[in-house]
Image (tube, rainbow, N blue to C red; front, side):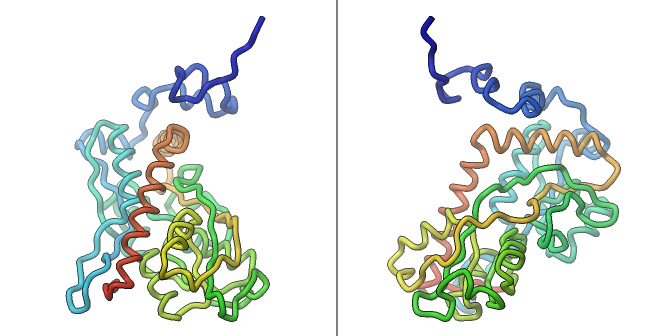
Length: 293
């Protein structure tokens, strides 16, 4: 009897593509999220009609002398809204500085933290977010990184990255990647745009960022002076969704939501939007617009 090759998910029903997923993934995706149990953290959010999520924040490029107020990171915000929508509530975004996040979670000001890789987790893979804080298994950003440097600078290859300064955006898993893999010295900046601005100003010998972002930038005329020196970086720690420790039911719900986020194309769309936004904002730097901290 002739067989038919499996079709893409968009051309077939869910039963077809589920059959090609690993067995442990299928049950969580096959059960609609609204039918999964919610623990105390998410139950309280449903009761009040809003999910309060702490996210990264930073000012966007602005003309000198006209600083803009910090705004939530768009990529973090996209996931926060997806999680809230899965619960049938609205998302309330709370922009938090790095030193505010853990305390905001512990004292109940936010239900969840969606803020990239925590600083304490940049050197090794971990599911812990600090004392009294838990993390849902899995990463909400699964890209590959790249490192670029000046074409005629001192960093011409991977070996030259040892001891070299590398600009990275705050919350980026590539900080740990360049430190562990190459022995580089990552320098954290408030955002990817700030990191790119600092790199272009000569504050670092190299820049580490998502390959999708850098590949777009390398197509710009003003980036002809730079070249890739390292490819296929993998973050050693997860960009995890964090919540107060002790609520395993809510943690498991979030883990299931993250699996859907990765499997149904939402992550790919969010990553594409992020790359486009960063390309636009970084391109503004050549026009005299700067990032104010």
